Amino acid sequence: LLLGVLPTKWLSEKFGKKRLYIVSMSVIVLSSVMLFFLKPHNIVLVYAVQIIFSAASGPTMPLLWSMLGDAADYSEWKNKRRATGLVFSALTFSQKTGFALGGIMVMSVLAWFGFEANGAQSALSMTGIKLTMTVIPGIVALIGTILLIFYPLTDIDVRKIAEDLAIRVKDRDNNELLK
Image (cartoon, rainbow, N blue to C red):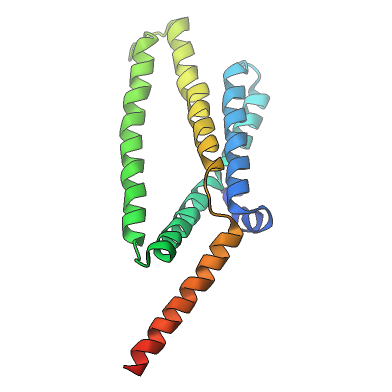
């Protein structure tokens, strides 16, 4: 995961935040689904796919927070009101809600597949466990990837917004000095 985080700044400058995020998420989708089909005795391939999954996951968190800051700047640029706290707290609330709902969903899927805590698992419940660890997160990541396609801010937009906001701040400071 750390090896995936380290080149994030360089990769995002080279390819763009949105494109890097989509590629990272696509690799997460593919590697998640691949893990479902691998046999447990093929340990080298399981580790290799898991390493690819983890490396692809690395850029997603810094990109998420960076793009969220870009969205907050866009909001200020468009509405002439700074709402950074609202934007970041909305994401934090969404994450916490997602964690809670995710736990409920996982436990529901496992129950549906006949999972019994502290007991031997049937073939069906083992399939449920594998699905909750691979295919289902892959589907969620695929949905996120599709939604990312509609993210409207390009790196050019972000630079222009930053320049405009800097000019606004400078103008505001100069007006205050003249008072």
